[in-house]
Image 1 (cartoon, rainbow, N blue to C red):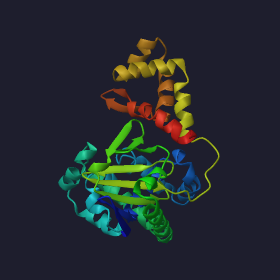
Image 2 (tube, rainbow, N blue to C red; image 1 turned 135 degrees about the vertical axis):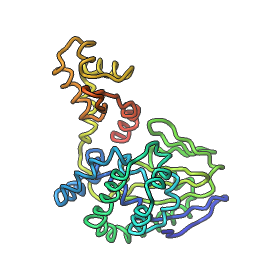
Image 3 (cartoon, rainbow, N blue to C red; image 1 turned 30 degrees about the vertical axis):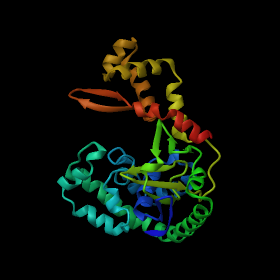
Length: 316
């Protein structure tokens, strides 16, 4: 829903609240609670009350891109103004061919069973958890958006952008978001900005550009963050802090390997290789795929690519 809008130098800025976006990103947080310290208490409360549903949401995070797949594709532009029940009905009406065509930018296809699992989990989550949560969030987010609109109108669009996130750099002709790499958006190519806020996106910043429209979602802190380091970050650095595991990583960066192959290359037992692979798996650094009687291990290079961004995001 559009709360208010302004125009500056030919750019229309729509201050907007999108309930479906907030719901899907809250599922992202619930699927990866160790990385979102600012919502740890909320995640623990939801998991305690709904353990089976929480487990299903976490089981589906690989299939759903961490539950951001529907807000990270061009089709989002047709969904953004929908209320959550309306969106869930709309998605349910799509046959599997329409569903997969919609997800083409996501880079994979699903079967009917996978699609239905995702939609069933989203519906149950809305009914049991987020429906009530959203009723409480809506007036709060609307008030925050009105404050953001006043600041933007008074100080100017690009001054407003400067205060959104420390890793968003506003240049004379461009915006640059420093993540695992630099994402640059030229100001002259932007005609509309959907400006929103989220109680779940902290510590991230969300930017998504489709055509000449740019989505910017600013995080707002709603609970006192725990004074600690996210457990997933600790597991990642522990997994890499071992010479033998680094040799495993070096081999997997070159090719896919089985435990048996790695055992031969490293001259250690298969049990020893399994132990090291388990540490890498727990840190999200490898994926397994069965090939006949053997299990192949693939290295997740994107995790390494994100280390500088994650480090400065948490420590900054």
